[in-house]
Image 1: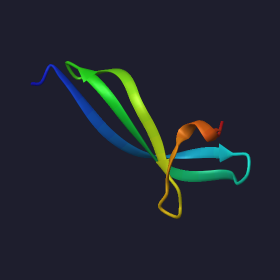
Image 2: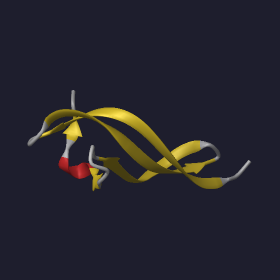
Image 3: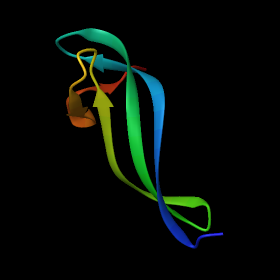
Length: 63
């Protein structure tokens, strides 16, 4: 078992953008793990319907 490793994980999430409203998109999280427990999220980004990759700061979680 590795002591320290980085893992990329993709999930579908409902997001809310001011321009588009509610959208369901693939969000990819890059996390750092220590002994299998997540320590820190290094980066998160989303893929648009047109294939562009954008940072998740411009849209918020739809609650």
